[in-house]
Every structure is written in structure tokens, then in C-alpha cells.
Image 1: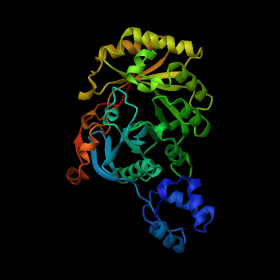
Image 2 (image 1 turned 135 degrees about the vertical axis):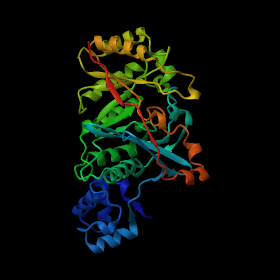
Image 3 (image 1 turned 120 degrees about the vertical axis):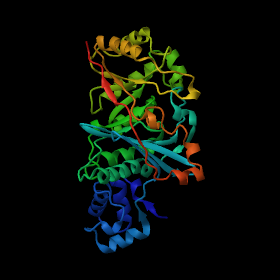
Image 4 (image 1 turned 180 degrees about the vertical axis):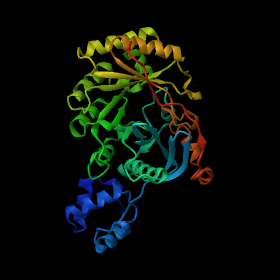
Length: 382
């Protein structure tokens, strides 16, 4: 059976090469060709012996998921829909900013968490992605962007595991992908520039802290258990006290000295001043340290099945001011790519429809040019 080399971190690739009778340094060379140079063809790997290249052609391939569609906005934001087989597809989004290029990556086809405000969750869960399907999104995007932008140097400086799925529910395939991102022979990303977002799977948060600590973002969305039970069903298994204790444990290993709390702003549900004050109290009860967390307020991106609406801008600003006045670093995310369904919580909400065979052929390599809004706006502390 042909092995997809995108499935291997460096240790896995070294073991694969050893089975072929090759020394470890060959794995390092091969790893660099794949991830630093974006090579897809073994013939291009000029410093590998021809005998090894011929051997690799028989037993290995470098295969990212096939792109079904591509949407490019006027400000450079790009969304790709990737075919992962059996009628499933996942999406990745590249977000360019002046000082960084961020890629939002999917970890599952669908999602089993069932959060009320997320259209991906309403589509249901299909399967976990393999390591090669996770890293393949980064491999393809970096390769495409260098050609598209006519640049030789790395374009993607940050990766956020905030696409489709709950990353920690796919832990076994996630960890090798993270190691490839971090490896100096691979993408060489800083641990501070790779973020895993989770709805709060406490045991896996502890494992991540021990095995591959990167920046952590926690989908909080409520200041108390009763409300969070309704919005994030996982809270019934790991309530706020357990979740915040896990955050505290994670900080001992984290590359940053804070945890980011994501908070989707839902009109009349979790956006009232008393909710903000409850959050302040929750933060203070948990730790006397200042700056141990920051809040990222996310305006809700409506979809029909949710029965929810977006908080008005003035309500979000009032909410942010209460947090900020209490000394909590707070940002408001302005949705980017919502016109092409690339905004937070919108990814792949209609993937099953879009991957019907006839539509798939029609949509392959489609490019659309549409404007999008600004991605992030900080709320100044007053």
C-alpha cells in the first residue's frame, strides 16, 4: 500500500525510511523537501540518490486533499474547500494581515460537539481527519500562496486549529500534525504562533500540556454552568470549575502566559451586562493573577437552524467595556469572509450539498472575488 508522506512527522518519516534501508539523514532531507520547499514530485528532490527516488515512487506519495473550490476576496482572504472522500469536505481559510498570515485549519469532517451557535456542528459529525489531511491543508496553502503572491519566503506565519471540528477529539492525528508545524525541518512555527481551540475536553487539555503545548483558545461562551450547558453541551461533562482548573494547569506549560477565551455574542442570550459582570467574577475567583486570560468577543454569524441572532454592535461594546474596565484584556473580532461563508462558526455548514457529484465537478477550481470586512479590532482599555 502506498504511504502518504504527509501523514508522518519527522520521527515517523525516519522510521519509514529505516524500513526502506535508509539512514535518518535521508528522512531529514525528504522532510525538508516536502514541508520547506513544497515538493510534490520525488524527481525534484535533487540531493536524494536516484535509487532512493525510484524506490519512493513505488511505495510513497505526497498527496494533499483535492481542492473542490477556491474563493479569493479583494483583500486577499482565501477559502478552500477540500475533498476528503466519501462525500465529505472540509474548509480552510487564509487571513492576511500586515504583520502575519494566518491559516485556519480543520481537524474533522463535521463536528460532534453540537454547540448551538455553530453551523458546522449542525451539519453533524462524519469522521476524524488523518494527519496528512490536516497538514495537507497547510502544505497546499503555503505552496499555493508562494506562487500566487510570487514570494520565495514563508507566507503563513500563524496556524489556528479553529476550522471544522473539535481538534482534541482527534488527538492522535492532531499531535503529529502539530509537530510537523513546529519542527525546524518542517514549517518552523513558534509554539506561540500555533493555536489549538477547544470547547473544553479536560483530559486531552492535560495531555496536550504535557506532550505538545501550544497556544490555547477555549470556547467559553457563557459565564455560568446553566447557560453554558445550553450553549455548549460538553459543559455537562466538564463544567466550568473543571475547565478553569485545567486552564490553570495548562498555563504551567503554555508558551504564552495567558489563555484566550472565545465568546460568541448572542443577542439577549449571553450578552447582557450581568453576564459580563459574572465573567469578571469568574475570572477573579479562579485566580488572583492579573492577565492570566484574555477575551475574544465574536459577533455571531447567523444561520437559519440556530434560532439565534447577533448582538447589536453597541451591546458588544458595552460588554467589552465592562471586561476591559475590570482589567481584562478584551478584543472584538470583526467577521472576515462572512460573505463567502468563511467567518467563525460558518465553515462547511452546507458541505454535504456542495459535495454532490454533479456540483463537485462544476465547482472545482472556481474563483470568486468578493470584499470582506476587517478581521480583528481591539477594544482599547479605558
